[in-house]
Length: 164
Image 1 (cartoon, helix red, strand yellow):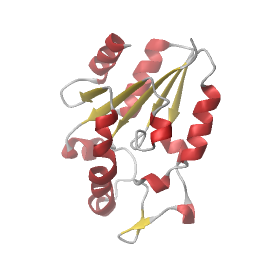
Image 2: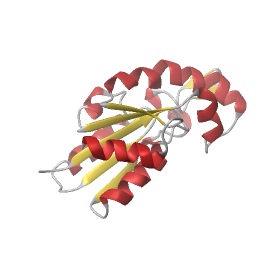
Image 3: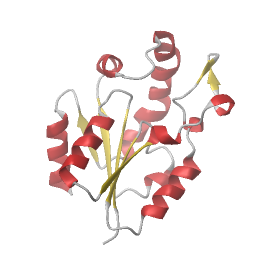
């Protein structure tokens, strides 16, 4: 059978981490969760946008490392859930997923839910433009799009289980 790869993408604050945790709870011990944030570049390697370090663009991710890590898990008998805002951006990584889920929520809701780096200037000048340019367009690659304002995380998980 091999590994079942489930990818969860969507904007910051859409509920990706919460859904990954809920799915892991359901699938149990043979499940591994990876976070795209673990593949984030730091320091001088980050591009700048409006004079600020841009954490929210494709160049901020170590795509080769993520791809290599996922390929190394491909032959194992487990479920791998990967969550991250830009997860469906890179074609080689995107093709590895058996199931691609995109979580959407309105801008106001996402900003309110956002748990990391709450600098309003960054949100307005970098995060929101990057969402429009890079994240929102990847919705078209999803097998399933779920609105986390309409459905709770548990309801989203149930909808996913019905499609696996």
